[in-house]
Image (cartoon, rainbow, N blue to C red; front, top):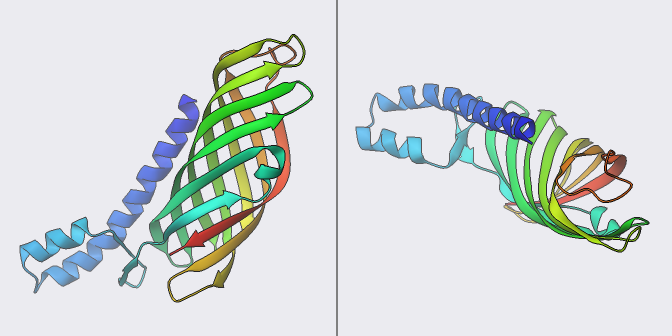
Length: 211
């Protein structure tokens, strides 16, 4: 868990560092004929700077999985663009998820945070890292007992985003992707999974709305 958090912190700080470097040249040019108060306002502005030096609004919106509800997992995340350079951008994601899933081993009933980072590598090709710290009630069908505890699940996805303009400011995005997921820890494992952490590989399509 600490390892995953460390990755996320490094990525986010790196994103802010890129933004700072891109912003610096723009502010220096502008500051020649601008009062100090205007420069301070630019520093606090929630805009990002493109490689051309022109500011634009940050992209933000919501994203969810179209496949997860079919297996009893329901979640949504808010995303906010923090970097923009050439044809790439970086988004941070934060949301909530609910697991109401029944398997051969028993039934899950849990609530989870969604913490993630999405980086567009080239054009619409993107890689997404998602971490789910979860508190779960698991009713085991093996021994009939309820196992309460924390667990962590991590996902890495590679996909391509397709955008469809709904209006001047609103865009629908569909992102087919392949995802590798792995359980990182369980504080109270149930029988059959005491020494085993789940690993899965599955296709997914993220649905997003940006504005």
